[in-house]
Image 1 (tube, one colour):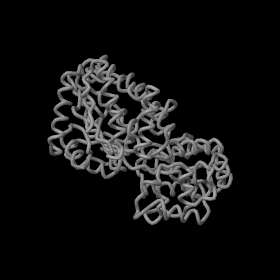
Image 2 (cartoon, rainbow, N blue to C red):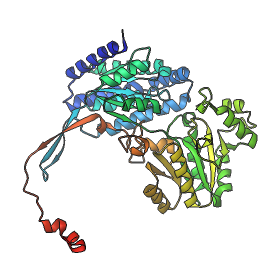
Image 3 (cartoon, rainbow, N blue to C red):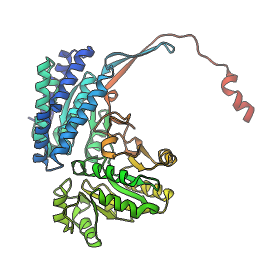
Image 4 (cartoon, helix red, strand yellow):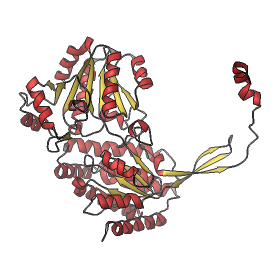
Length: 462
């Protein structure tokens, strides 16, 4: 069959599942969402899917993916169980408006190879929370892992009596034609992954939500607790071998604490590359400007062998850099246990450096700062073009939602118009519903002309 014929059948089954599903019943919706969550959160399946993901893709680590599968799923379920997503979700008597949540329809969920289980489950939970059906279009590299994940979701849905076809997957071979056909046939595209896929989603003619590229820079300020910062940075950078778009890619360290900060990072497991090692990293991590797939997201021992490092017992590699831009690849995203180090004269210089890094790659995504001076954090939020500024946090763990922050749990970070996205927040359930407004009359709210124009007339004349 042609790509279109394959997708037509999938979409038809999805729409039939929506009709059979009690998507106007909050209890039924929440039962189905919990079933999807349990399909991955259950301890044995979390491990099984993590092992399968690493075996199939070669990316990341099993233990990290177990944590991700369970933590992201649990946190997202927490968020979803606390909200109403069908029928009346808000009533504003003062304005005479009642808001009804309605499904968007068939959701095309484009998912990456880095999270072949956690991202499909995360998006399916949000989509079904809105009363929708979802079709996963996985990375071809990760198809086996994502397909097993979808089968687990379908079995749990069926166990609750919900239609299994609320969650489907594009069958193999997953290629550009089938993914494009799905994007055209769906009612909403939600795309996480390569910027090529995000651009294709935007060009599909279907309403789409894409996310921007990561390349997180983090400032270590003069007032930072250096050991605390180093410990958090190391834990975040090393998690899942730096596959997350929220992983620290560059550190900008103020001159006043530079040597002490490097020492703290070394105590946390980092090692500084020699000039020769630095050149080998640049020569081998990229090929024709693209990251080499069999090096990224690998254990440090693999990097040590490939780069000929003197140290083989470290957790991550630090490489000093001064330049920023296409001719300085270390200033971009590395998806590996390589952390670029910049030295800044003072806070203003650090802000200049992180801004330049983001202008090169990652604009809109996020930055972090380790500091005791909240004025510096507020200055970053006021002046740097990012959606999230994280203060004294392990970036990978906090950026996509945490139990000690107010950000919603997600695996897809919107980057605003700065990153070419239509959302400037973490992807969440509200992006998977339409809202109908029931409008009734209220006492007239009409000010006098003088109330609105009076100050202007007084200042400028009529």
